[in-house]
Image (cartoon, rainbow, N blue to C red; front, top):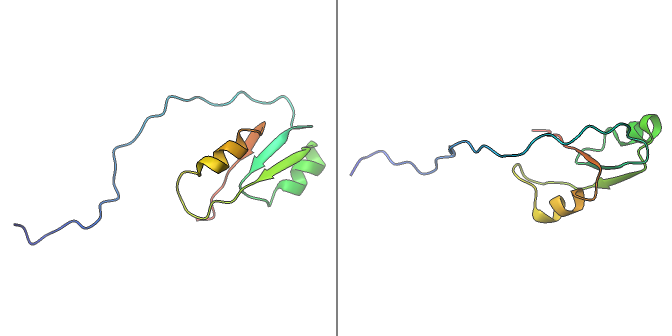
Length: 84
């Protein structure tokens, strides 16, 4: 048995997802926005006419929960960001 032990190995093989980009919206006016950061909400409403905002917070780094994903599927577009 070796004296060296790996207690935690955070590496993984890269995953390639078969998904493309969403089609570009012609306008943001009247659209529902899914936003995980709120610094731009007022600007989107005032300058671009965004009607409604769905706000969800993730407390940890990583993939969003199924509940968050379900809420965001009601949106026309989603903005995400990280403060890490």
